[in-house]
Image (cartoon, rainbow, N blue to C red; front, side):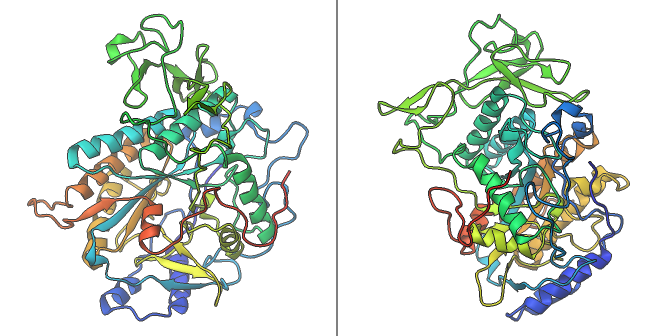
Length: 509
């Protein structure tokens, strides 16, 4: 699978024209000047990609379509009818969007600047651990924990042989570990968002196709994640990671405190209360019993073996999760996690997507393009709207602020580093406008892009110091999209998650 590449100069201009036509408020001169200063970004892809470097290494058996079925197509949602001809809002090659955009003007200088960091994907266990530990480390350094948004693909949370361009989970054990890591992220204050089921391009989908995609996502994900339940002892009731029973001292699954306790020289922390010896794994390097691999179908790239969480779990004398890890929906303390936000694979958006998200009660989307500016509301004239948080490059940037788009940029690491820092400083100078960057669960450029992201977050929380040490953005918080949406007035989802608020959704195959 390859990302769609396109020159963005004309695309950004098209997006800006549409945004301007939708405006029903009068911007300040500075805001108008910033909008008119939208950059022409050469040689950058207007696409998102939620795959790993090893995705091309997946074996044929990891293809998610059932044996004998037709190859998955990105032209229509799984189980849907033929797609409509509606193009992505503001994109070239299709009819213009019929939706209106209204900038959310307010005095953003009245509070710290909101910097949002999001990750697309969710496959590799190692990157769940790395990103959560980075947030903890930054909290220890700066006194406030960054809160990330993780846009997850539902195909990694089921072993069902569904249509997917990026594979699926290979075992129930793998699902249980990934679900536990995702729950741990929720417990630590991060947000989980929707990045689709099998990473299909929906830019040409019909409304019914989008409804089916969202139904499939929620069929898989609703009931897997829950609001945190503190245990009264500084931790949480679930998940529970423990060393593997019977693991040899120093072997995979054994308790450890530091790397040299392990034969593999790899001791991994699983929250505050458990650290175990791990080892690399892939298609050829299998995990021991009681553990699961985060990338079991990779041929060359590797991930980590982690222990399967402990079950059953009881709370207040009642079963919370049974011995197989199934939740008890009748337990009074268990409340389903509500998904509030969405990012389309490849940023493949259209009007039908917005309508389907509105029916489901989503608060925001991050798929639509825009030049520098404030967040906006998008929706039909006279109807409901949701918030749009675009990936916005500033003048001089070589790409939209997303890691995949820097893969073809010369001197990518240093250019990304400079662009991200300039973007933060410029957004702050314009009036502390919210700004965001998007990365993936991938180690592209030998992990350099992840290093740049870590440095960028530290740079923001340090006040964006210039070469002389003067702070250019003295007040910045790293917040999730959900928190930003709440601050801008978006409603919270109901306790049972997102349910359709319009015509009933057909059940996809």
